[in-house]
Image (tube, rainbow, N blue to C red):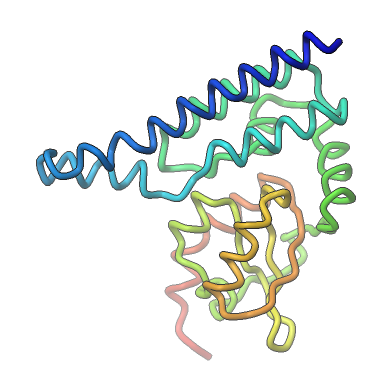
Length: 205
């Protein structure tokens, strides 16, 4: 048992080093790269997506026996592949949903309790322009977080990785409001986010 855990930790450390090297490479090459190449690097490396945060999420599920070691390895592989695309939200929950994971709702319930982030169905809310405009669209897409309603001076937000406390603080700083964080299913998150342009284009009442 100890040897298995040790092997997993070694693999995680190795992947984290690879991710750190990948994040550093564009910065080192920035001064020498042509303008077009620099722009492309910024689009992918400057998104703010953190592989280490999602791997930590998956590791927590593995440690809690919510997923098997084989499932953990598959999730890490899928996260790596998905992170190369800037057109979709990359998260552990998205990976599980794409894989047709049968216990997704059980996972969400477990994490919800662990992180004190109640589950909410976004289909029950009508996301307004005022709430949606508090965060940049690109930020919401790449970081997997969205403000969906306001409660007085506070904001209600859904987050794909509620273990990520640093992201929660970043959201509050950007929004300039105290935020209360919830969880939702990836499909609901994606559906609302896909309507971002339409919502933001609406004229003020």
